[in-house]
Structure formats: C-alpha cells, structure tokens
Length: 182
Image (tube, rainbow, N blue to C red; front, side, top):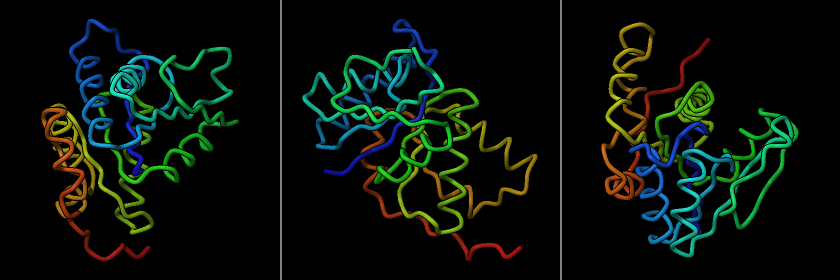
C-alpha cells in the first residue's frame, strides 16, 4: 500500500471550507487504496484523517513529544511519536511515497520547502501536489522574490480540488534539471 503524506494546518475549524477540502482529500485517498500519513493532530490533519478513516483507510499520525500533552486525533490507526520536529519531518518524508500540501502555516511551508528541496536535488523521487489555488500565488511570489526558476517550480503540481489530486499523483513527474553545484 502506498502512503501519502498530507501537510496542513493544525488550526483549521470544522466550519472552514479548508477543513472540508482536507476531509474530502482523505476520503479520495482512502477510497483509492492509499494510506494517509499526517502530523496526527487536529485541524486539517484531523480532517484528512477522519475522511480516510470513515472510508476504512489506514491513517498514520506522526506526532511530536514537543507538543505533549496535546492529544493526537481520534481517527489514527497508528501513531508514531517522535522526540523533535526534525525527527517528525524526517519520519514523514521517509514513510511517504508521495506528498500533498494543503493551505497551512509556517510548519506546512517548512515541510513543503524541505520536500521540494529534496526533490530538486534528486535526493527524493516522489510526487509533490499542492492543493488549492492559493499555492499559485505563493509560487508566483517565490519566483518573483527568490531565485526559484521555472524548472524547479514545475517539480510541484498545483491542483484546485481534492478530485484532481489522484490524477496528479499518478502523472509522470517533471524531472528537474541537473542539481546545482555550490
């Protein structure tokens, strides 16, 4: 069974359309036979977990003792507790066959940029899908204010809806140019 890591906010309320988007994503992934891996807490992580669990999917949460005593969400079938945020990110990256990022905060941006960098340097070979139109503005801003070039930007696929995630995960990846030297 392939495992999809989903990055997203812990501060998402059930009344938010972003929560619903995460919930639908979990349902789509589980129905397609994927295991869902997330940070294991509430918000978008809880929504994607609940969506997957309600469809009978495997739901893995990678939590961190730094956040104790915060409880993991109730829909996990497996919890992996790490000692640090670095260990948490490493575990998520090592356990995943592909990555989907939802709208989130600085933690989500950290996860996305680390995965993107590992893909760019060919240290990792897996799809990276950014779910939501807001990601287009983020990537445009990065391209305008950093040295992020088009070939590196194209490593990630941006989709607008949870229904578009599965085709994006199954599309052949766009290979980057050679890794930079120096």
